[in-house]
Length: 314
Image (cartoon, rainbow, N blue to C red; front, side, top):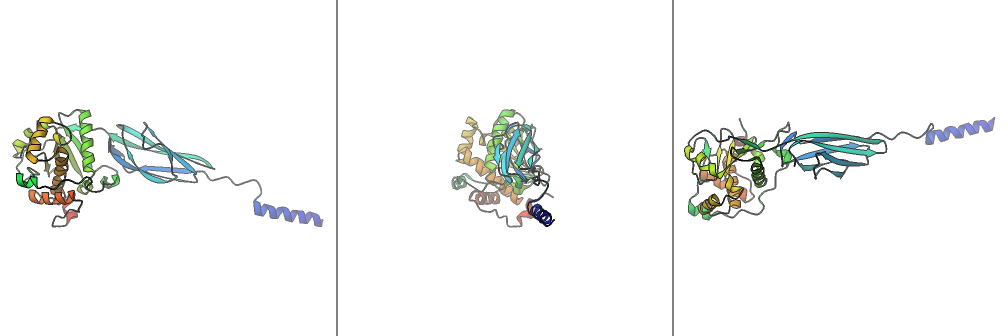
């Protein structure tokens, strides 16, 4: 009897220490994934953020395939992803652990280039428009300091988004552009803008206009036709001439003689100058040139008044 009781005590002790009735079941993994935007222009970047629990490994895939969202991933993290293909892209995350596997997906709409009639209504210099001539004489233009190879750090994709994931920077090609040419030229413009704090503008539209249509838009509005950029305040739009982003031989030579700059430098100069107008909400050409030079020198713009109060739309 004593032996029986002793055996029972030993058995109960073993069950207490090691558990009786078999081993416990490993917890089931879970996976989450989110995108910083639900819709972006094709060819632009956004941020994918993901996490998992009870997982030992994760992998990424996209439908249709995207080179920068594929293969093994950490069990949590964030990554900048470029939407290459137009249309709806499914970004998926699959994770696995001892308790099994889990997957999740997020959909992002990659929108193709917009081609529309984007010319503003007729107006007068100093009222609705700015950037008409950059306010520089020929002698001053020759003294403009060269653009540095790297200006300011590119903006994080999420900084140019509203809270609901809608991009604040919009891009349009004026009528006459083909879809393919629009896509290529906008890609050049976006890369140039990435060097500047354009996210501070809030909602803003950048419009490319063919060089053959440029003078016909500027002349009736009293603007200098040899000025390759101008800003239209009421609609928060900046217009950029085609010759700044692609080769237009005859027009390129005209602008070279006028501004004494290469087209690449003139594009940077035009962007910085127009940002001088837009960031400070100031139509004065000389002040815009001063702020533009600060931007090209990798310095924070100063407007003489509170910057945040001036750049936010009413």
